[in-house]
Length: 120
Image 1 (cartoon, rainbow, N blue to C red):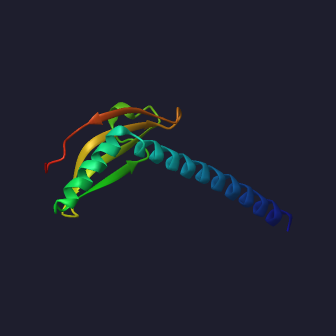
Image 2 (image 1 turned 30 degrees about the vertical axis):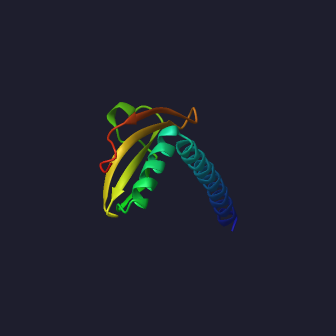
């Protein structure tokens, strides 16, 4: 019986700690996305694409987040990647910007143009 109580207590503590870390990470992801949305490049891209949509083009905008960077130059750092994309015909995603977010500093460290809106 004593072993069961210790096991239950250990599992409960592990669950609480895991849940707390998960919630902190979710808060950080939300804050990071808000910072991405506040970028001039983000606002300009959304504005251009909205204007094209009103002209009848089948185009939209998406943001793809990769919370653990897959780029070799980021392998020893705590970088998250955000790709700001144009989406054509609800299928084809063309990257416009690559945004790097440092999770330790809690700030955007670079915004790199990697393409342009294909319909203009």
